[in-house]
Amino acid sequence: MLSVGGPAVAQDDAGFQSYMRELRQQALADGVSARTADAVFPTLTLNPRVIELDRAQPGATNSSAIPAFAPYRTQHVDAARIARGRQTYQAQRYRLQRIEQQTGVPESVMVAIWGHETNYGSYTGDFDLLRSLASLAYEGRRRSLFAGEFIAGLKMLDRGVTRSQLKGSWAGAMGNPQFLPSIYLRIARDGDGDGRADIWNSPADTLASIGNYFVDAGWRAGQPWGVAVNVPAGFDRSQVRNRLVSPRCPRVFERHSGWRTIAEWRTLGVSPQSGRSLDGSVMATLLEPDGPGATAYLLTSNYRVILDYNCSNFYALSVGLLADAVER
Image (cartoon, rainbow, N blue to C red; front, side, top):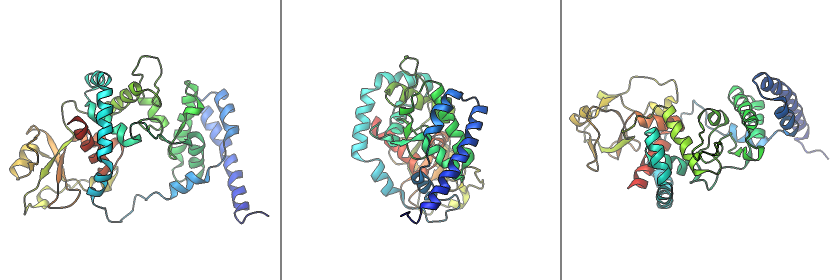
């Protein structure tokens, strides 16, 4: 007997294969070799699971309440991750120092990204990337994005990356730094001089690639990501309200205040918690992730670079805090 979903599945499979013929032509027109196309396209089948996962993602218009940051911090900047980060930091110092000299990106920030993305390489995902990206492109909700990433994955094969290496998250991120294929093609770097950018197995290539990503995103050498601060009781937040609307990740950026210099924040009574401070001329925004009365943060433009990696305040704060803890 056929299952109830049988005809629908068969229709999807037929539609998928029809779209694959169209996608193959796109790939060839974009410079993918016929050899690679001939090797990959006959192996592709629809993966309904990645479509389910994509449809379960919150939409851009999600109006649900934002939870508190403190529980997220407890889970993601925990003692085990800090301890392993310190071990990784010490083990890779000779590489990290060289990369920081070349890029200006702090050693601890590179380690923290690695820790957050894959727990220092302990889990990088086991989805067949090309099958996942082809399925997501076929589904169509974000076809332009996923079709482009699929074609970038084919170009990686043309560059000598093996099909077995193209495994990762259901949405196409791979390797220790969880790069999408297009990011790999543009950003990945050979850190150990063997002529390959192996972000799956080489710590040197992983860290060099993360550092290069931050340089490309505009990291300013010598400037911290931010600092934890106390906001005085009775502080008038209306005087520092952000009146700009970001075209990217608006729900993330609408939680930030307007920009002020550190000297101006001091005048308003906002003071660092630990005695650590920033240069008075540095521009920063204020974020109170747990609301008034709890720990707040003054955030520099380098915090925005972390957001470029993953546009989530909780993620970016946790990367910064983990970096600080690893270096301590």
